Every structure is written in structure tokens, then in C-alpha cells.
Amino acid sequence: MPAYDLIVIGSGPGGYVCAIRAAQLGLKVAVVEKDTTFGGTCLNVGCIPSKALLHASELFEEAGHMFQRMGIGVGEPKLDLPAMMKFKDEGVDGNVKGVAFLFKKNKVEAFTGIGRIAAPGHVEVVSADGRRQTLDTKAIVVATGSDVARLPGIDIDEKRIVSSTGALTLDEVPQRLLVVGAGVIGLELGSVWRRLGAEVIVVEFLDRILPGIDAEVGRQFQRILQKQGVTFRLSSKVTAVDAAGKRLKATVEPAPGGAAETIEADVVLVAIGRVPYTQGLGLEAVGVATDNRGRIVVDPHFATNVAGIYAIGDVIAGPMLAHKAEDEGIAVAEILAGQAGHVNYDAIPNVVYTFPEVATVGKSEDELKAAGIAYNAGKFPFTANGRAKVNLTTDGFVKILADARTDRVLGVHIVGADAGNMIAEAAVAMEFGAAAEDIARTSHAHPTLTEAVKEAALAVGKRSIHM
Ligand code: FAD
Ligand code: NAI
Image 1 (cartoon, protein in one colour):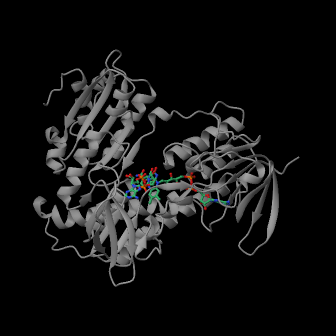
Image 2 (tube, protein in one colour):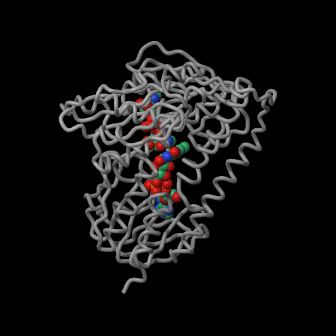
Image 3 (cartoon, helix red, strand yellow):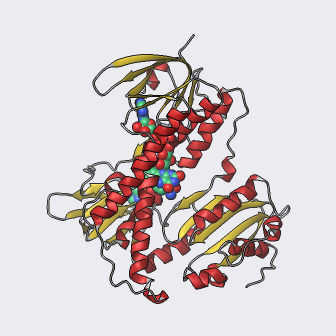
């Protein structure tokens, strides 16, 4: 009999949640993690530290620009960057220790070392001191996550040419930050450093920011960020960065090619996406199939082509989001325990934690048009929401897309303060197959920003009250 029912490789949001759920269901579970702390990208160098800096820098900006308007005199706020970084690190520490506590509570055994699949049912763990041990198990879940995508010829030193990891630990505010990629990381971390005093220039290959997000949302959000002082160079690419001098010199070209120009910067942030991480796992030797982007191929039950080996999270296809990884972790644990685990990929929210936030769930207008689905759109701007007016947060809008025939909600898109919390209502509605009418007839507390969601639902039927 193998010692374990399940070995999870990787302790990020996918892996640790999977391990806990499997243990709850009575499986004997071990987790193998190569790093010295648990929680993966998300807790150590991703969601948690970035949100700590976004929160702190947002308050810093508010203290500098908004307090006086509300009659609060605190003088010019002063930045203590080492203290802000300490605040962020303490937040990370609390979270990663929380995972260690949950492992103990649920009797999940944790091994520190690099996990390699020696054969189906056998995981070899190599510790930092070179010690090797092989663990036997009925099933293996690979949850090894993702790593930074790199630009050929541009070496990330995490000091001046940084990935998100280095951008979370800069020891001074750069005078000018050049961001490569107007995706989620570029806009979130670009926002942090702009608020703390940097000039931020974002170079994006495509002709729009946040590809994949509803086009109208993207356009409006770009205008808001420009008003805040971020400069965008769309349809452009960075082809080289010369790090020889005191300042970095980035070569920027039009995306299709053409005359290059040089932009100087103190720090360059490379944020052009992430790639699945499968290094050292031994996938090829055991014959686990990957696709042309290096992602592990799984069936709808998260099973790979090799019996007893499963995969979840950033290392498989789908949005690279912590909650998607968690949902898959729960689903595969339930499947392994004989239950019917399932993830509804049509209702996974996506949030950009800038100010204002951008939050979406379901289909965009472009996707509905491409699929030939007739829809009605209901829109409501925050300028017409009472609470947003008194809070001085009137930027943005709510847009609800509903099936023209059935009124079923197919997509909800919000740009606005606290959009990330508000999108939960839309996700629940979609999970229950709600119609726009259902949201419109649900009582929403007054005065709250969520009334804009209700008004957008009313607008689907052309009967919003406050417009
Ligand atoms: P990971 O979190 O990457 O965890 C994988 C783990 O496996 C790591 O701990 C790694 O050390 C370990 N590992 C890898 N190989 C081995 C091996 N051979 N042996 C042992 N261990 C191994 N998502 C959101 O939803 N919201 C956000 O706000 C958000 N913010 C982000 C901000 C940044 C800056 C970044 C970079 C990402 C952010 N993400 C966010 C994305 C999110 O972090 C990922 O989607 C999520 O962490 C994926 O979880 P995972 O469990 O699949 O993998
Ligand atoms: P991304 O995929 O969101 O954006 C990358 C951007 O870079 C795209 O706009 C792309 O067109 C552009 N790009 C690609 N190559 C380029 C080039 N050579 N020159 C200029 N632009 C180029 O990737 P990002 O921002 O690195 O984030 C990685 C992942 O992390 C995302 O998939 C996201 O899901 C996740 N994440 C999620 C967060 C959240 O949920 N709030 C926060 C941060 C990251």
C-alpha cells in the first residue's frame, strides 16, 4: 500500500487548497514545495504583496490629494519606503504562516524540496542539502504554477531591469519607470510606483491595454489612467535595453517594425505575461503531454494522459488567476475522493486592483458578437450614483450584457471604486443562471455603489431610474 493517497507538488493557491480539501475528505495527503515558505507565487511574490503596496500607495495618494477636499488637514504626506516595504513583508509573512498552520490543522504532511515524478505513484523529493527521498502515492497533482515570461536579449537582474518580483522590492522610487506590457501586472505595479512619485511610461505591443477585457472598458480605463499621469505607447515594442550607463536606455520600435527611438529610464519592468513552470518535474520521462505553450494537457477531470497524474492552476490552460487555481484544487480533490468536482469557467471573475478597479465576469461584447449571440446592454455611470458622488469616486460605469431572448446575464463589466468586491454579486447571479431582471428586482442597500449594478440591470430593460 502506498504511504499516501495524494501527493501535491507545489503549495500555491492551487496546491495548498487542493491538499486541504483532500485531507478534509479523508485522504492521506502530502505536499512538496521547493521554496522555504508555502503559498506559491500568489502569497509570496504575487497577489498579496502587490495588493499590500496597492493599498498603501492608494492611501498615500488619497492623503495627498483628497483629504484636503474633505476638510482633513494632515499636511504633505511623507513617504517612508522602507516602512511601507516592511508593512508589505509582514502581510506576506502572516499569510504564508497561515498556510503552514492550515496544513498542520488538516494533518497535511509538508516536505521542503524539489519534487520530481520518478514514475506514476512515485515522487522523489530533493532537499536543498541534496538529500533524496522517494514518496509513494496513489495519485499525484501537479500544481507547480508559472514563472515570468522573458524578452529575448533583455536580462532581468531584479534591480534595474525587473519582473514583478523585483518591482515589489525596489529600494527607492525610480524617477522614470518604463513598463513593458499593458497587462494586469504592468498597470497594477505601474500604478503603485506612479502614486509614490515615479513618471510611468507603458509600452504595449497591441493597440489597446488589457487585451481580453471588454474593449469599451479598456478604452475608458486607459483614459482614466492617462488622467492620472500614466503615458501609453501602444502598438510599440521594446527590442533592447542598454544597461551600460547610469540610466537604462530602452529601444522602442513600432510593433510592425520601423524607426526606433530611445527612451531613458531608471527602472524597466518586464510584464509581458507568465509561462507555465514545469522545470525539474520529469514530465517528459514519464510521458506527460504538454501543449505548444508548455502547459500540461488535462481532460475535464484534470487528469493528464498518464494514469494517476493530474494537474491544476497556472500550469494548465485557462486564466492565470489564484481563485481559478483554488477552484480547480477543490474540484480535483473532490474527484479523487469519488465526488463530482466541477469548475464553471463561464463565471470566473477577473479583477485589476488599480484605482479605480476593473472587474469583469463572463463574456465581453466582442466575444458575444463573434459568437453571433444577440444581447441587450444596460449601462450605468458612477457619476449618477449618490454614494460615488459624495465619495468623490465618480469615474467609471457598470455594464451588464444579457441574452436578448432570455434576459440571462452573460457578462458584467465594472470600472469603478471597489469594483472587485462588487463583481461577486454578478458572479453569484451568473452561477445561479440569473436574468438581468433578477438583479434589477433584488433590493440593493442605499446609499451604496452596488446600486449602480442594480441600475445597469434596470437599464438592460431601458428603465433605469436615476438616468
Ligand atoms: P503558484 O502560486 O505559482 O505556486 C506553485 C508552487 O509550486 C510554487 O510555490 C513553486 O515554488 C512550487 N513548485 C514549482 N515546481 C516545483 C517542484 N518541482 N517541486 C516543488 N515545488 C515546486 N491572481 C489573482 O487571482 N489575483 C491577484 O491579485 C493576482 N496578483 C498577482 C500579482 C503578481 C505580481 C503575480 C506575479 C501574479 C498574480 N496573480 C494574481 C496570479 C496568481 O499568483 C497565480 O494565478 C497563482 O499563484 C497560481 O497558483 P498556482 O497554485 O497554480 O501556482
Ligand atoms: P498579461 O498577459 O496580463 O499582459 C501582458 C501584456 O504584455 C499584454 O498586454 C501583451 O500584449 C503585452 N506584451 C506581450 N509582449 C510584449 C512585448 N514584446 N512588448 C510590449 N508588450 C508586450 O501578463 P502580465 O501582466 O505579465 O500578468 C501575468 C499573469 O498574472 C496574467 O495572466 C494575470 O492573470 C496574472 N495576474 C493577475 C492579477 C490580478 O488578477 N489582479 C494581477 C497580476 C497578475
